[in-house]
Image (cartoon, rainbow, N blue to C red; front, side, top):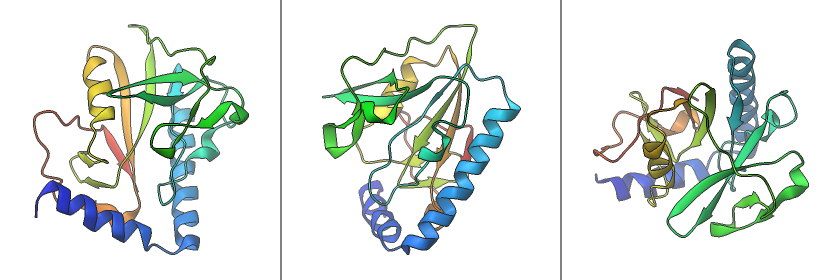
Length: 178
């Protein structure tokens, strides 16, 4: 099975998870993220606004005293922008809720530690992921390799797999919560 076939297979598996189970697992994952934030000295959290069938981590928003940033995509690039009110998220690229144009851009600093929550269709036990195939997170994180980002992948337990068939461009997460 190649990466595209895995993407299709696990997208279908994820889509067929019952709503109640999806809510329960999302709540459990959110609790783990909040615990991680509480136990560490992160300067900011880089979150995402979930699409249908993704792990819903929006419960993190408003539960922490540190700034929260969300991604916005422009063609081949992705950057993060501070959101202090969920009303500042608008439907954007790929029908994903993204920060409005006037939200401040995230500028990481060398001496700071950041948590980035990485969505995925599936993850393997080594922390590699299968995303949607555009490489937005891999490109973004490859530019930040000299900075202190703690990368946490999130997925449903049904989407943990043995091997994602990663290549040299794929960026490994530090931890996967499922």
